[in-house]
Length: 120
Image 1: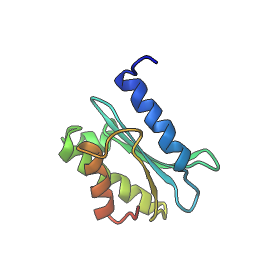
Image 2: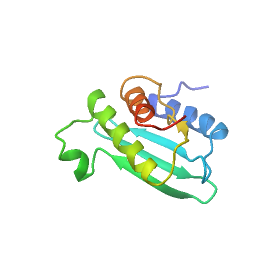
Image 3: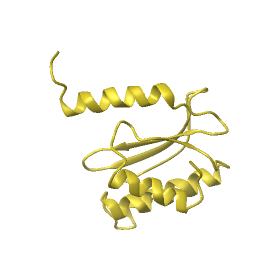
Image 4: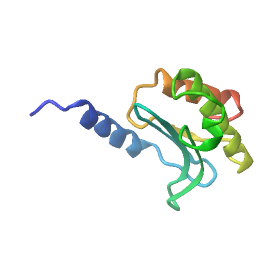
């Protein structure tokens, strides 16, 4: 069996996590996507296939804050995402790390969202 490269290994881990983690309208899935330049957070109802709320480092509200997509920017994004979720009456979520290690920017997003009022 051939050795997997990093991208294929992450995709395999993500498929494994997604087999166990699913969101509903009451408790949506908080999906986090990490790229080399940007971060994306979505709150997804998997039963309906709808995104209920979202936030990313690409949008103007984040850009105007002058932050970058590093650990401190990730914390800002986590807080912004949690505020948007709470506006939509979402207080509990299941966390989908997207096959990434719970570390660095991903951990900063999750901890900031918890501090802003989301329950995982």
